Length: 286
Image (cartoon, rainbow, N blue to C red; front, side, top):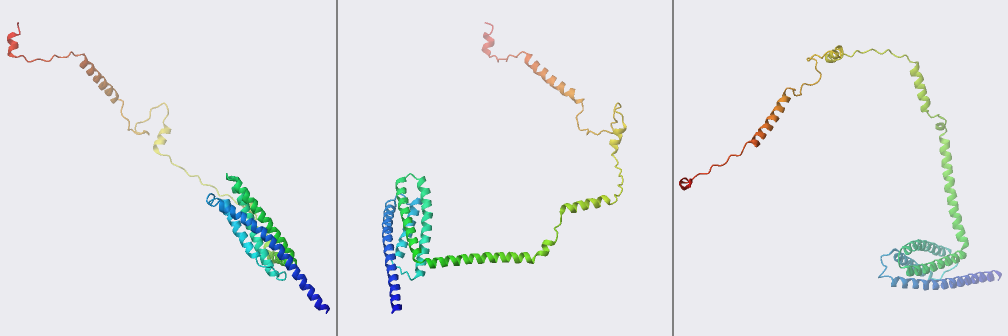
């Protein structure tokens, strides 16, 4: 009889917990539905005017994710089904992350646009939706604390195992390569000093003197004194210049042209002879 009473009391406790949790979730979901309706009204009013703006697109994204959350919370929750509650929690966390990204982009875009009033109203409704998400998340976490703690412990164990595996691999790599570390690395400075010392100790071979013969015209130039004139046969400069004898001829030609022009100008102009007719010959003397 005692065992039967205990089972009845545990079932009653589970039923009471289910009832209280469902009541809280339904009340929170109704307020969330109201905020979603306000956001949808704002989105519908600004559809034609601000369709291409970033804050309008992000507000539409928040509206769609909020509708999905309402659809998930519409079914009653059983406290004993911890896996189902954990799935709902994961979905809420993802929706909250999307909402935070959209909230940041909306804040930046509204600060740059001229329609501040509509943008501020949308930001207020989105912040209210975010607060309701947080309330639902905390409530679901209180329903299944043991499962969440076990999940966290498993995650911590996985992290510790991965870190320990990395440490073991590094230790094994250090143990497998001690000989490589004991081998001294070659020092380029010491090698250069040794090479210089060896080169200084080695005997230097005597260098042979090489005679360079100079061209004949340079030898002739060096043999002649600066006072004596050079031989025309030993002329270094090319003989392609014009002779000086031709210069006065060009001057004479220019002078002759000038005199011809002046003579032509000084001569008197000749009168043209006019042919006389017979009448002019007869009456010319009159």
